[in-house]
Length: 109
Length: 114
Image (cartoon, rainbow over all chains, first blue to last red; front, side, top):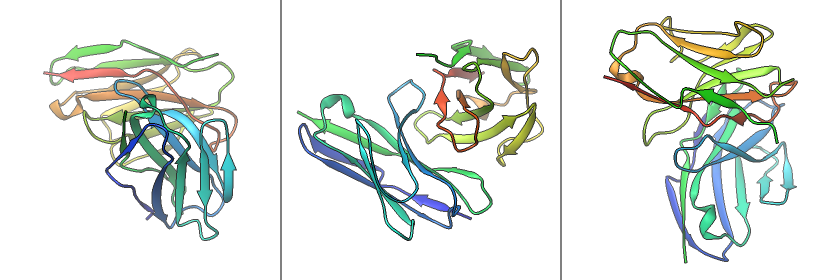
């Protein structure tokens, strides 16, 4: 079965780049790795997804090594409003959805 | 921008009672999901639904849970006999045409079982 591991929490400062890594072994070979953001009392919100190498959109980048055993969400120049919990989402080899435990990111002024 | 809506926003019930949580998916989405999040804990997958049947479910989704799309628009989660440990936020999410499509989450229903 797949298992995901993320840091429980991280701190950073406004204007910094933040990288959050999720380790995930035994994931489905043909599915995306997805990251979500969640603010308190709200549902998770899609940030980015990728299959391999690097994906970039207007809010983040996602780096996935060739072995796909991890993925790194990169948030450039964070602001206070990026304070949230960040989840990685994968499917295991049985195609079951597996959510990470979430990383609580706190951005300080 | 289309969004997923859920009702009620907060439901309080007595242990042993049945509750039905409702979700209105984004129109033309084909995949529907229910998740649970106990206060302060991570998001937990319950069930996915496609083409009027369950496509996958987790170990949490036991016989006390059921889902249906009774009228082609609402997507419901029924908990037959609630327990104290069912107290949580329940999120509905909908996706597009493929199981890998992005999931859009509703605002959630806070269920409190007394």
